[in-house]
Every structure is written in structure tokens, then in C-alpha cells.
Length: 383
Image 1 (spheres, rainbow, N blue to C red):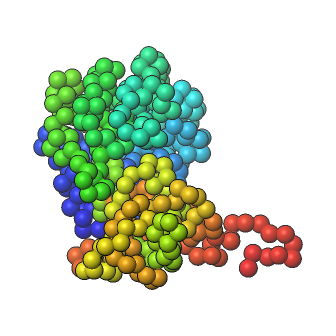
Image 2: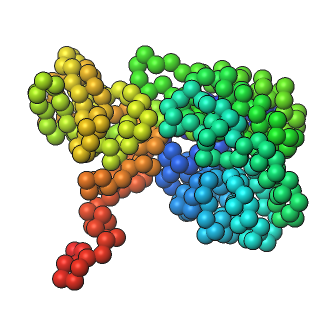
Image 3: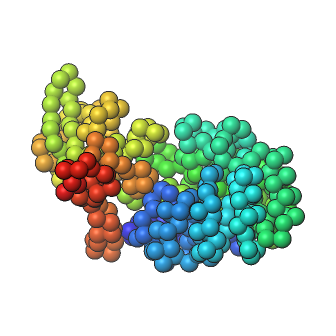
């Protein structure tokens, strides 16, 4: 918790106002959508991005000010848009013409919107987390975005205040982030430009990532050349805000030698789906054996029924035994939000630690909760 609070001031968004007066700092809700995180963001003056009714309701329930909530998504339903309008969210990021049609039916008062533009930039990152290439499912290409803006500007209930672009996650090439600013500027003159984020995070030893200053220099240098001087610049630091602040703890369940030295733990893809999607290398640590010599070379594996359920290959750990604790570092972003019930696994608890104190903010899921949603044949009650 303490690290996230510090990061919210030190990451690109926290520094952005120095580089570009009037800039805003957004916390993207989907990387860690729990009420405690939303409350923390609110306390630190960070605005919230949500993508779906569930994230919106979590943020509202956490006490977030709707005037600081930005509603994203490429497939917003009528019900979701009605909910966003009911709670008077600050801004809706419009993705497509069908969404415009929905809003034309639903709007009864002026609503601030941004148009999402496909910047046609193939970011240097894993294909699964690219979001700005020509084939992206998010947003509209340049010519269609222009038509969408014209259509909304002709409607009295749309307040078109700007453009939004996002090229992907885990971006280490800051020149591509600068290019995104140029592409956003090309759509026209607006009061607001949301240039996304996606700043890369160093997950493992030996990796390097751009610093905050390098990130902001790239964006604001381009902004000074291409954006109106009085425009508001919005930055979404995303995973860089929390990724390295989170650690997931597991217990060793079994150790075996079968040509490989396997250390199996009591978790897996069910709570770390990102290891399968993006394959980012993370460090694993013997949390209860920190002073022991890490002499063994092992594969740390999970318990799900997938051969790809591997947390680390050829990791150096001390001689691990049943009950030892393995810390999976850098798991603050996307771990909980993508957790699931694969193999009947239960979603984990979340503990915030800061200023010498630890507090439970999300409890562990129970088997009763796992069973409760299912319907059972007569004579086989769910109890």
C-alpha cells in the first residue's frame, strides 16, 4: 500500500503536471479492480478508468467521485451506458458507431465524451497486449473517427471534448508513445487529449525500463509541437503504478526430480493468468529462506492442468521443502483481476501493507461461494 501511494506521486502521472500544466493522472481500474485500490486512488487524487459495469459499481461502492470516473470499453451494452449515465460519470470514451446510436437514444442531458482513435501503431510488445495497430478491436480508424466526431458534434447531447489513443501495454519504446501523441493531434483541435500509457515495467533482474523522466520527455516534447497550448493532457500509467508493489505468496506442496527439479506450489494459472497470456518473466523468492544459499536450480510450477502453468524455469532457490513459502514478485497488476476458478480454485485474499501495518482488504473466496451460483438436480442440493 505504501509503495503504491509513493508511486502515485512519483510515476509519470504524478509528475506530468510539471511537464505539461493542467495534465491529469489516471489509474486504470482493470489492472487491480478492488474497492481498497479505488479508495487509495481517490485519496491520492488519481482519476479512475473503468471498463464495464462491474468495475464502475466497485468504484462507486468504494466511494469514488463519479466526476473523476472515465468509462471505457469496446462493447458497452445499453445497461452499462444507462448505469454510467445514472451515476453521472465524468467522461465516456466512445468506441464505435453502434455506441453512438445507443447514446443518441439514451442521453437526456449533455454528456462529455472522447472518441477512441486507432493510431495505427504496432507497438513493440506482445501481440496479446497491443491495442493500437490497424487491426485493433479498440476504437475507429482516422476517417471513421472524423465521421464519428462530426456526427456527435451535430447532436445537442454530445459534448465532444477530445480524443483517446492507446497503443498497448509493456511499452519500452518511448518513441512510439510520442508517435501516438502526433496521431491524436492529427484528428483535430480539442480541449483534451488522452494519450494512454502502457509504460513498461521491469519484472525480472537484468531487465531495463524507461524512467519516468524519459517517458514524460517523449510525450510532452511531442505535445508541445502538436497539441494546443491550453489543451489538457491525460496519462494512464496503468500497470506501472502497482505491478512491482504486489507480491503473491504460495506454499510448496511437493518437490520431485524427474529429469527436471520441480517445485509445485498451491496456486497457478487460476490466480496468475498473465504468465500464460504475456509470458513476462518474474522473480521467485524463497520468502521464509531468505538467508539460505540458493544453490538448487528448479522449475517452480503451478497446480492447474496446463503444461504452461510454469511460474519460473531454472530458478535458483535453496533446497525447497513442503510448507516453504514462495514469493512471486511483481504481481500487483492483473493477477487478481484475471483470477478464476480453473480446476475449482478459489480466488485469493488481498492484504495491504503499509506504515508497519497489514490489513485484509479482500478475503479469500470460499467453497460455499464457489458452489452457490450453480443449479443442482432435485435431491442434490448445493449444500
